Amino acid sequence: MGNCCSEVAGGREAGGGRAAAAGNDAVNHFLKSRGMYCSQMELSFSATNLRDRDVLSKSDPMLIGYTKGKDGTLAEAFRTEVVLNSLNPTWITKHTITFEFEAVQTLVFCAYDIDTQFHNIDVKMLKLEEQQFLGEASCVLSEVVTRPSRSLTLDLLYREDPTMSGNPRHCGQLIVHAEECISSKTLVEMVLRCSDLELKDLFSKSDPFLLISKIVEVGLPIPVCKTEVLKNDHSPAWKPVYLSIQQVGSKESPLMIECFNFNSSGKHDLLGKVKKSLAELEKLHSNGEGENLFLTTTVGHNHQNKVLKSQLFVDKFSQSSQRTFLDYLAGGCELNFMVAVDFTASNGNSRLPDSLHYLDPSGRLNAYQRTIIEVGEVLKFYDSEKRFPAWGFGARPIDGPVSHCFNLNGSNNHCEVDGIQGIMTAYTSALYNVSLAGPTLFGPVISNAALIASQSLANGGKKYFVLLIITDGVVTDLQETIDALVKASDLPLSILIVGVGGADFKEMEIFDADKGERLETSSGRIASRDIVQFIPFRDVQSGEISVFQALLAELPSQFLSYMRSSQMVPNASWHLGLVHLY
Image (cartoon, rainbow, N blue to C red):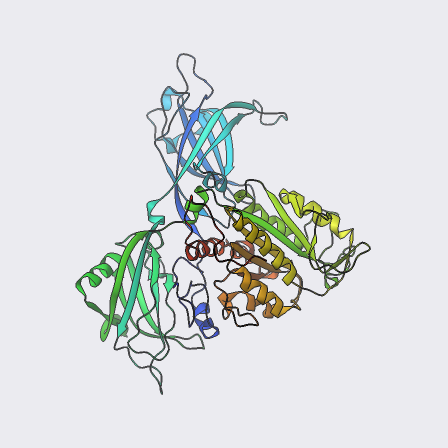
């Protein structure tokens, strides 16, 4: 669940890894996941066929970029230089932006012709009302990064009178090109070891783990990685940890490496710490030396560092260029969105306002509709066809038995609908054409999604599938669901589960290996990786990160874990390999 993880399964895994044992819960609470996929992108810009607003020469264009918030407000992000006398400019100024997979990042661009009298003024000081407007264009960052060329051509639009309706004029084109910064791809692998740790437990040795944080100029250190907990070991050697250069800033950026003794209460004992940059850790490895840990003590108003006999060693340090999520997108890989909606009777009569399926005449979305929109609007950009499988479960279609996986569009032959609006239309129609029933079974829809994923893989398709299950209750086919999830863990498939309503969803957390042990089938087979992310709808957070962003945040990591475990590379054909077809 993060950019730093251990690839070795079992035991108490590194934080950010693919699983964590139940005993590691306190560590997970100690360091909340920072697993959102963020990559630095450098945007460059050019334009063609701009409007000529000058009489004796061509326009002198400048481009301004804005980010657009969910409330529609614009925040200026950058201004380019002014290119003199050109209707086909290529601007030198680049803009660096953090690509956030789990968010819809809308960008707005405005081109202006800068009057000659202002050419000697810093572009940041220019008053736009004094310049001539050339046109406007907008896009979502995901539209750029999902193009194989990472270039997107936009029409620049101009409206003579912004207050009047009617179609705007086309006034040239803007080309936006994105490149992933090299720091996003550079990965450092380290094997860390400590010696002679202090004994904190009364009747046994310590249970140590490491927490690695980057040090910023203002504020507390920011955690970026933690290791697994090693039981009863005062000279521990942890599994490899992985850090991208982007995570820490640079190889010269200072890091704080703290060694804690694990306590199930969550109050972990600090055994010592070291302050070193990646470059300094690399030097320790090269010289085969250790670094003494220290503890900060307070004497009066003074802080002193007490050097300990405990030492930190770097047994391995290697640096490589990793294949990123965006590399696979550029290689033609797509994400295919699927959705399954709970139509069990516990949702309540959809014609009554207290029902979770109530269709409000005012247009206010219910929890099911909002979840489909919020998740779908992010994922739709990663599928060029935008035809999405959509199912319902737990209902009785007209004149039929209860079905635990029926096509939401009412078709007997195909389950796909066109676009997110197609899902919304099919959902609304289904409410009038089925009778809510039960029980709540996940197994059939998961198996159906897995069948599509396995067939696509067998046919050499370059798709990774994302199934969204929206439910109001705890499943009654727990073991069957676990069996289906374990089988699906070998496939290009992730499953997002959103719990709506007031039910106690505690039991659902067993599906999410971030919060428990790796899933195991009734026959003893262990899931090859974590493919489930569960979150209750009511846990909507205030602030910058919504519940839906948290739900989507782990997808790129799950995607990459599948690619790496299957040894698939960008631009290569996908083959079935040792996957059992459903």
